[in-house]
Image (cartoon, rainbow, N blue to C red; front, top):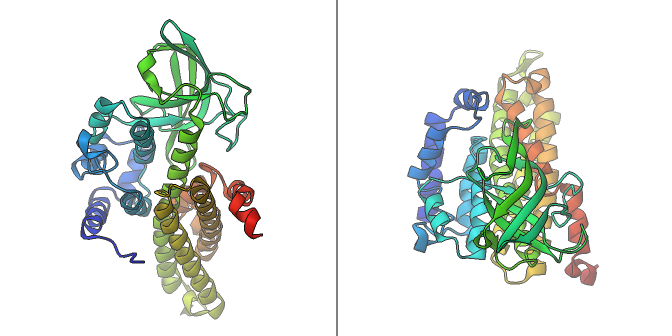
Length: 379
């Protein structure tokens, strides 16, 4: 199989990398992190001008109809710059709208860079089980009424619209009875508590109190949203794997440069064989993670649902193991300075920690992988 990038994919990657190096340096990123809003409208406009917001949108709505491989390339570059703009949350929201159909006007606004999305899926009792939903959706006056609370919604306070999972019927942990809705963030009854996560990103806890929605807000069919929710969460997990590869690339290079420059006993510490072995292992962990991230992106297009689930969970688990090793070794090889906010390595390490905890950690995906029928048949 040919894993080389196409000319268009390479152009996207090169354009993003040039912009990050020129206009999104570590110092500029820190200023954005500590700003009141926590994201940059100027950076978002640039992403739109570069075609990044149009990439996941179908051509019929003014987009480029990008594949998962195209998005993988973009996420790797955003990982290299630890970009904190709400790109991933918007891409995932776009995927919900694309698969559900019937929301062309919203997709056109996303392609133009006029609308940012967030996905309000998690709840405090659910941990990583997205089917564990207490938020309710009640049929009301030709539409629906939403009541409940969603937690740690990435860029929830910055988004103009929210993709919300709610339960139309059934018990809290049943997969049947789940519905998905698109909700304007300024709808009456929606309240958002914004905060900064440990990696500098923004998240919000969002309360829905008697939020009235028209029937057109429903994505797909009422009570049948689990398959869509499961597919898009796998899509997000695969993109997170790609982002992690970009983060680990930079962290590896930064650590290698440091051990070449740091002197001990009159020589660079990189000359010590034990540290050379650790750097070699970091490189191997990165390359294994890259292979699994690529495989996951390829398998997202599979019509075999079990194969998709199995591959994505294998990738998220393997990338999680690599992130732990690369991150911890990078901090140890930097020494005490490695945990200071003045050094970029500390921020890359924090981003890896948050990727591990988003859409299922290593243990969660190992358990999910083992539970798939394909594993049981070959064990």
